[in-house]
Amino acid sequence: MTLRYKRILLKLSGEVLAGQKGYGIDPAALASLALSVRDTCLAGSQVGLVIGGGNIQRGTDAKITGDRVNADYMGMLATLINALALKDALKELDIEGCVMSGLDVPKIAETFVRESALEHLENGRVVIFAGGTGSPFFTTDTAAALRALEIGAEVLIKATKVNGVYDKDPVKFSDAKFLGEIDYDEVLRLNIKVMDSTAISLCRENNLEIRVININDPQNLQNILHGHNVGSTVRARRRA
Image (cartoon, helix red, strand yellow):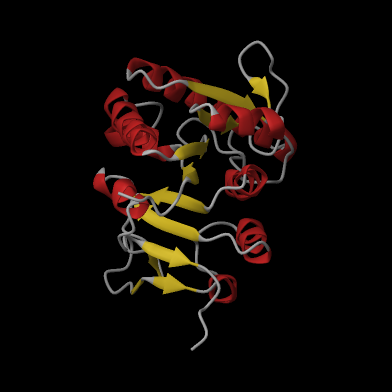
């Protein structure tokens, strides 16, 4: 079957790895995620992946340090822990991966170089982008949009714990309205929490489609690759 997307950038929050524990890395959640990524590779897609670090340390968390810059670097280091764990989980499934970091940590990860990332993807490796953008004050959402554009991904897939985009938090509000398709400008104007505004703006300016899915359903990622309408789509509004 023909794939809709040959190269994707998958954005995951660190909380996805926390599973039922709510913090740290839950082995069952890690294994489930690795299986989804493996199936995507076996279907024929090239996979770049950005994972957050919120299950360990958020960059904006001021409980440990009042210095935002240090807090952001701590958050970047947390993403490296998650990336290394995912790389090993993929290895258990005979999928080769590599960790590329926005921070220079040569003993544990390659420093991000676009040409090297493209070579890894062309050779069938999953490239796990860690360390955010390498600079404070930018979220992993922005890192995901940036890396997606740098590797020429055809879509940025934001994996969440809900079924797509809503006009308000469906966990808190039972009357939240599901939005199957929404324009970048509407996301920004209505301040809908799909991704941060910098990431949305980057995608809008470069016409990079965003798909938002529930990663807890292992079939969602496969369905998107094979052309099914799953979750929500953020893109420029189609004119009649």
